[in-house]
Length: 245
Image (cartoon, rainbow, N blue to C red; front, side, top):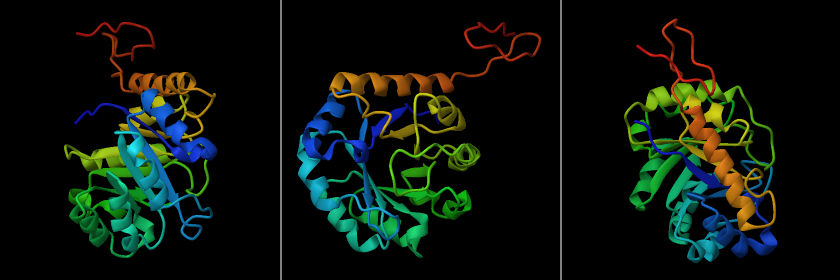
């Protein structure tokens, strides 16, 4: 199943002194989802914000709130984030021993359920919960800080997860070091939802953010273009019309 490319700016990279203005700016700039990175200083080595901040900014946009819980344990806080306005709640496979139970709890709250995998975690961790998922989030950096460099080792994992998903209506999201320079490779591997922080929040205006979002989207969509072959069997070069039989 081919799904449209979605861009989800991470507000972790926003100017927190002007957070309301920043939300309005990325909304106007064409963000599809708003990605909210919640960190606890325990599961990851940083603290960001909690349910009260999400509740405060929820009225500022009608866009989907994609809430990524980098916290352990997560289960005691699921209801709070659901009530705060999360549309998608993603927990880490590594953050608890009963992943299936956590996903059931999210769905029982009327929210879409996601699971995230750290770079060192195998995709086998989600094999038996695929039918409880609305989203799989592949971390392409080690979680805990914004502005890190993309780990190319995760591209093969993305491909394997895309194969595992098959025709299920599950979004495959990638988070960590996403830029216009690697968006094509990420989309080619099978991702359909791209989280970007620093690469979106460059500049000072909604127009700057719109240009950044558009550049990432165009690159990702270009990565999805089928590699056609000409009659000699040679893959068509970029910008070349393939001579197909």
